[in-house]
Image (tube, rainbow, N blue to C red; front, side, top):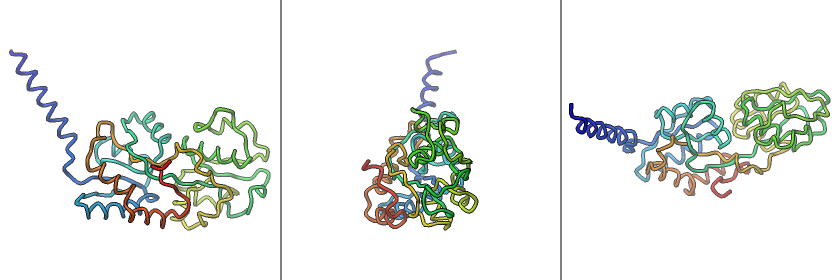
Length: 266
């Protein structure tokens, strides 16, 4: 048996496999969630005018978009910030990387029962996100509101176990982030995402008792791809449209109002 021809054939097959894996000739498939879809739809329409075909795939949860990119079912997703992505890679064994920044949203503390933070009662119920990353963001916001104190250094990885003081003995419950807007009828205070509040129509997204102030640039939402696909020319063109098209910017302004900033300017 001649080894050299076999090795050459094997190398050739690997090269063809790599070429196939990075075949960028078809439509760009972009995964997202309802909170980010409308401005992306505008970007898709603008891309079509430039000869770039883009297919938008909308997911209803925060797990499937990453699984789909990892498996190659879609090319890129847009719904998560880097701390969430880092945790997803760790927990899921994914090979995903941030490609380019999109937007950063305010989140706030909302209530349908009280008009000010000092009205939150002793033993009141507060809802925060149940995933470890966005839950930490909620806890940091409660600390900013001076309702709790967290262990020094806990930061973006804070959990309920990191609460050092809770002077009002608040009952803090964890709720799936996309359902927080629907918890407002049941709790005294809830962490809220303006885009989900807008979709649920439960409260005016501008009426938070406190916003996080965009003080954590780590929470910029990212376009995310599988490692090794960063050279996709379709993606480069689409991100350029999303970030710099005046038509897309007008849609972002219309949809998010004053509760967002372009992440690429952070």
